[in-house]
Image 1 (cartoon, rainbow, N blue to C red):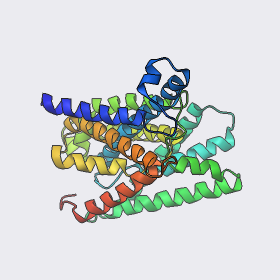
Image 2 (image 1 turned 120 degrees about the vertical axis):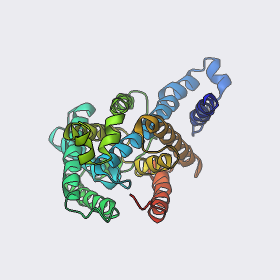
Image 3 (image 1 turned 90 degrees about the horizontal axis):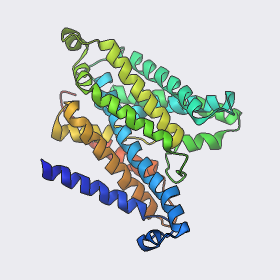
Amino acid sequence: MLLKYTLALISILILFTTSLFVGVGELNISGYLNGSHEQELIMLASRLPRSFAVVLTGSALAIVGVIMQKVAHNKFVEPTTAGTMDSAALGILVASILMPQSSLMAKMLVATGFSLVGSWVFLRILKHLPITNPLLVPLVGIMLGGVIGSVAGFIAYEADLIQYLSIWISGDFSGILRGRYEMLWLTFGLSIGAYLIADQLTIIGMGKNISLNLGLNYRAITSLGLIIVSMVTAIIVATVGMIPFIGLIIPNLVNRFVGDDLRQALPIIAYVGGCLTLLCDIAGRLIIFPYEVPVSTIVGVTGSLAFIFLLLKRDTNV
């Protein structure tokens, strides 16, 4: 067990260190250690914040993905396929129009409210879908997200904010600098909160009747889970933009090796989510160097292929 933890730590440290030294601005260890102001500025103002932002985002998205799957009782659900991210983008857009001078925190709170409403609408729709066809759930969620995205697009067009909307719907870490990513640390705290209720989330994933029979307050835990999902989604969309499929790929991948016990699986899900997002971000910086491919594009392609694979290889009990 100790060997596994050691290898896991070494692998993420290698990816993190690689992320620090990949980019247009030349950064070398000797220059940084010799006290070069330019090298220090690149490291502390750009590369280090970006690398932390990537890990925090990937880990948090993977965690809220598995929470969404437990709440919706469907392994193909995550914020992208439930309309939650589109709702957050719409919330930020509305806040920008109605409160143009407001802080990023205020816009995030508005986006959280919109995410909660979007998730609630999605869950209400699920009650009218046949449980015998689980593939309908993500399809309905994608359509709901499309409707919300269309509304956001129309509002942005009328308000001449199309360029701003494109920033929020395209996840990209190239604009992450010191002073513009710190709100992502809130996702770390929310992830710890999710771990504290991991056992309860595992139980609600078994269904409402089983949860009630075991004495669990099903509605309270479901609501708490949705609040965590909505807050994390709003923070990430407001800071980085929309990144699809992380919350879909990672939980299903880890589930195949670890099982459904979130107490055991959540740390692994967070770790793999951070590693995959780091890997995709590094790839985006190298593919057409010195230019960058947005991480949402890299993850979107990878996630789409993984989604198709999961659909073809889905378990009969999903």
